[in-house]
Image 1 (cartoon, rainbow, N blue to C red):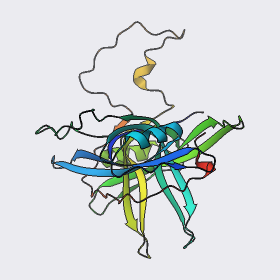
Image 2: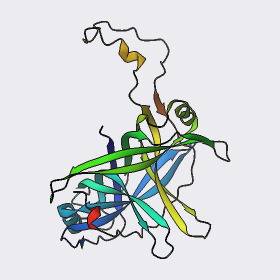
Image 3: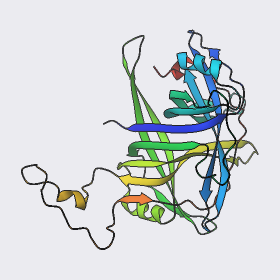
Length: 293
């Protein structure tokens, strides 16, 4: 059964690009994008934050990026989330980093350069950060409460990417594991409905936060802060009346209810959070196994 793993980002390149070559002669480069965004606190205040994302482009796309994308360029990326793991050579500790593998790339800067932002339009200016995944829950979620009293739920969701190896013709498959965070009333509702093995759709923004290990080393983790979660594979009561016993749609139009009808769509507003913006110093260690084909 297929899954879905896509992310769309519009951000600004933070540094000059370095296009490298793999031993097999394939071009590869890493874009490091800053994505400003706005959000409202629980008090209704409009706040600003920014996230940093590593985007890896391969082949001709990497060559085009190296030719046209400069420091400060605004870029649209559509791709998939991928987590690479490795063992630290000094400590032996297992490390990982989540990045975006670019599938489509558009340079959105006009030829005459970027214009100044209009006054009083912070919410519509600038950037996009959206991830959509459809997969299976890997373990029963656990509802927690923060020290400030906020309820939070973390879902582990697995997706699969499939492709055909160009050199061998073999079908390949790679599993990705995503951490999805849900806040507030939606977290409590999801904890009662979603179990291990359920198929779910989650949509939200990609966020990277940091913490320190007991030894003082700084570590990062990437997660999807979800504002929409849907439990799939269940019959919606409103849909049952649309089908007849012969499998044809009913011609009867139901009356519009006077009060809203609850659905299994879970929407959440995240509380005011401290936004951590890690320094972009990561450089990919490119191996043949990293190639997305």
